[in-house]
Amino acid sequence: MDIIFLRDLRIETVIGIFEWERRIRQTISFDLEMATDIRRAAASDSIEDTLNYKAVAKRLIDYVGNSDFQLVETLAERVAEIVMKEFDVPWLRLTVNKTGAVRGARDVGVIIERGDTGEKGNG
Figure (tube, rainbow, N blue to C red):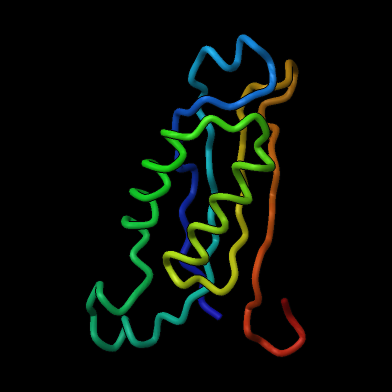
């Protein structure tokens, strides 16, 4: 299994359960690790043969930027579904970070892992 990753993809969105949070946009940071097989792309040296991380980022920026979930858990599940279905990703690990949400803590959020690596004994 090979992994293509995106780190610290920052997107502004409406997120939160409190009334004041529903009136503002907050920055959410995403880290994605996405399983793929890069051998064909490495052989062809063609973007068409790989998981295009720029296309993934563009799709998530559009989706998350227009969303208004209350919970980061819901946002994480929806993002995982989009990446897996639309980009044919069999496995991913996703970190959703709501920086500054808790006084005294730099980071707070969720990490989810979905899918199957396809390797025997994993998934």
